[in-house]
Image (cartoon, rainbow, N blue to C red; front, side):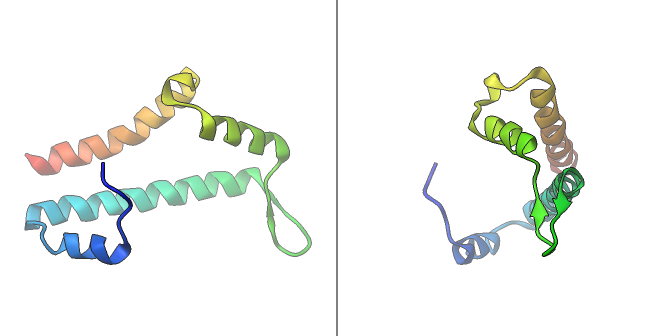
Length: 100
């Protein structure tokens, strides 16, 4: 894979998409935002707020997140791998349905 692209390069690349490709791209972008928002809701529900309004993540949860961040896919628990598969399946179905 190539190096990291800038936002401007990414926007330039979007100009070259065919209408069907652009539709798929926009739907995937919408799905990504929903995934991110769901993750934020989940994370915030695990946390508390301090007196200054800062979000505080419990130490035990941070340890688990750090473990997952460092792990390769095959090192995750089956439950963790299944969560990732469920998330990918959403994209897979969207691409398959729009590509037909």
